[in-house]
Image (cartoon, rainbow, N blue to C red; front, side, top):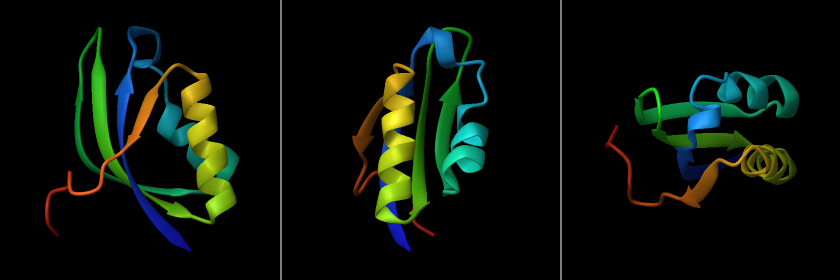
Length: 80
């Protein structure tokens, strides 16, 4: 099982949607949300994502397909 760290930036159209729940159900990945700020018109989240390489790639492709910006967040985590 691999661990990857990402920063997600949510457009207004996705802020209210349960996208993290959907990637868990659809792609069987395990998220660990480290930091987040979600408001009515904008949101961001830093999370650690666990799963196989294929599962993580599919989950990221799904998120990007929704218009969510996903970038590598190495070094952008709260310790612990």
